[in-house]
Image (cartoon, rainbow, N blue to C red; front, side, top):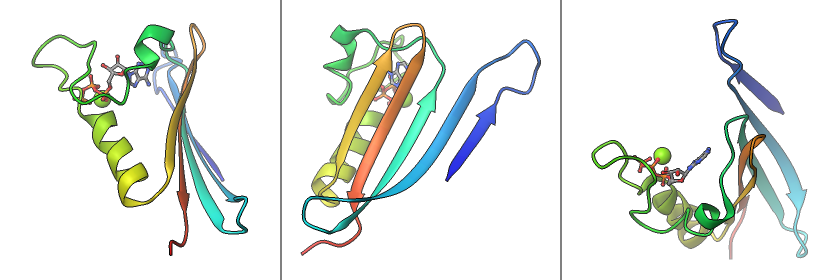
Length: 105
Ligand SMILES: Nc1ncnc2c1ncn2[C@@H]1O[C@H](COP(=O)(O)OP(=O)(O)OP(=O)(O)O)[C@@H](O)[C@H]1O
Ligand SMILES: [Mg+2]
């Protein structure tokens, strides 16, 4: 399934695409994959390596806390035994991909 959310004004070409998919992991257990992609500026490699660090932000103090991705990562990986990664190309955009096993244990 794919949902596209586009900027409303004609001068605004901002777009977010949300996709979902079921995959078979090595162990025959199904994983659900959720991708959230944007067509923003992309993320430099030096920043990509710190994305999931608690309190890492490139936003001005007060504007960003830098905890959103760290908390998301913790929930996905530690609570659900899943994986979270970022695929980004400068000038093209970014996709965050969350993969969570449907059943554990
Ligand atoms: N889709 C994106 N495109 C470009 N950079 C991003 C994107 N998502 C996250 N980032 C970068 O990762 C940093 C950390 O993101 P995160 O959401 O954890 O914190 P934040 O947005 O700075 O603050 P907050 O915790 O309030 O959301 C951001 O400051 C930004 O530099
Ligand atoms: Mg954020």
